[in-house]
Length: 126
Image: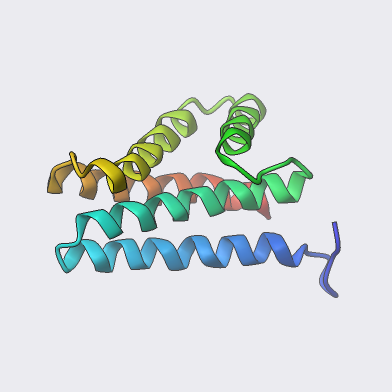
C-alpha cells in the first residue's frame, strides 16, 4: 500500500469517490427512466465500494470472482450477513444490464440496497 501524506491509500479513496459518484449517477439515470444504465451504475457503485475495502486490506479485487471472495471475507470479518444479501442484490442489477428483466420497482429497490451496502462498507475502508 502506498499512503498519501495523511497515511491513506489514494486507491482506496479513489474507489470510494467513484462508488459515490456511480450511486448518484444510478439515481439520476433511474429518475430519467433508464433502468439499464441505472442498474449498471448501481452495480459499479457496489463493486467500487468492495474494491475500496479489499484494497485497504491488501486483497485481490481485479475481477468478479475476487469481488465475491472479498465480500465473503468482509462477511466473515463482520458477521453481518446483510452484507451478503445487499451485494447479491447489486449483482442482480449488473445482470439486469444484459437481460432487462427487472421492473422499475425492482431496480429502485436495488439502488436503495446498494446505498445501504455503501453505508456498511465505507466505514470498513477507513
